[in-house]
Amino acid sequence: GIFSINMEYDSEFLLVPIAFAKDIMDYDGRCNYVEIDLKESQDIEMFQKELEELLPEGLFTTNRFEKNAVIYKANESERLVTILILSFIILIAVFNILASLTMLMLDKSHDLSMLHSMGAPVKTLRRIFFLEGILISGFGALIGIVIGVVLCYLQTSVGLVRLQGGIVDFYPVLVMLKDVLLVFAIVMVISIAFSWIPVNRMTRGMLMEASDRKR
Image 1 (cartoon, rainbow, N blue to C red):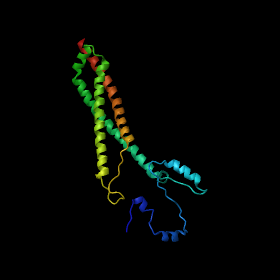
Image 2: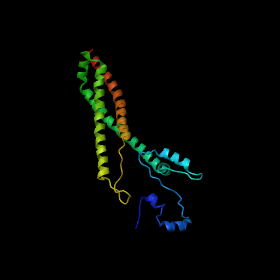
Image 3: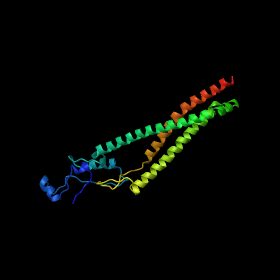
Image 4: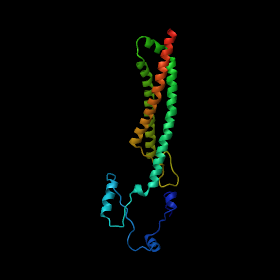
């Protein structure tokens, strides 16, 4: 039969009977390496350190991270690029929110000047629109995270995106809490930074313009 894992392994490894491999490699009855599977709760680095202390000189150990360092580095690079692209998408969405806030402030300019003349401080008026922008961004981020988690759950349980000719039937995904929190933090930081400065300037400018009209 045919045994296929992926292109990288298929081009470098060949599965043959152990007797045939011993004849080709001129091995005796001894093995050249031993694989050890640990429980998820065990510390890999601690176990590796203790094992190396017991092994004689000339023998060494490698864990799965060291053995597949290239793959893990590639995955980490893809993760960073994905976060960067997501940040640009969030930035574009924040500009849409700012446009909506600008239209709202222009529409409510008369009400703002009236509230200010009645004694409402500029800080309070500014805070109204600032909090509105934060609420829009926060609710949008929560809705997006919920939809993303649901899609990931469907992918792991049903397999929305399937793979052809691979070792797995569908594209594997894993939801990590730190990534979810990181995405939410990025949304809120960008929203706060790009909401406070324009709202601050526009509120001050609109109130000054309203005061000039009264004069």
